[in-house]
Length: 225
Image (tube, rainbow, N blue to C red; front, side, top):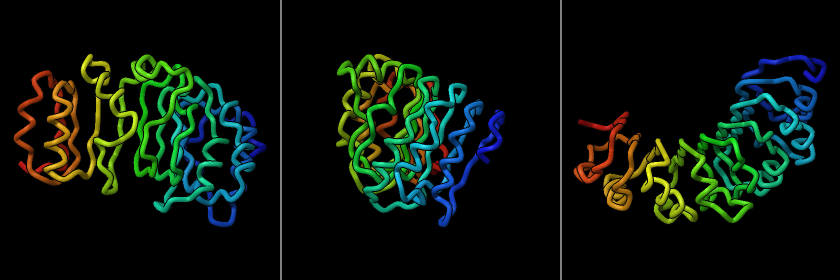
């Protein structure tokens, strides 16, 4: 793979259980552009191998997906993700199944407009380096935080920043996944000024949805009528 230094399109790269170190081969693919997904990152045993991927050198990438498939908390994941810093030109970042307890601050960059975090153990949104969190999150138009465990989404550290952005209509999409009807009702009462909402659950449409006076787009995928 490392010999394909002129390769521009590679949509998916999966790491097997016996070849997690092969992630280093990506370091030569500096011409990749568009979107790129890395699967099975739980198979990386040495964070230095992840550093060799040199994602920061891929200047033409616009969407980057980092995916783990092991739902257990794994401390090594924190070391691995810190070596997977992307170039600032990436405008869409997807992180799935990350087992670390915190996100690195570099996940939020000046070009990011779409941030999707799913199946992650973190109890806080990615931290911000400049201390001006509302300005940074103001740039993000699509924020997805899929709740896949029993943790209360409303207690997510940093969520107040998102609430403020919803109030001034700066976030255009928010997904609520796998929440109970009671939790969804409580969520909607707290964020009554959401402009766009997707409810990805199998329950009935909560009556409290009528309180969203500024709602202009509603997606009820998976909901029962």
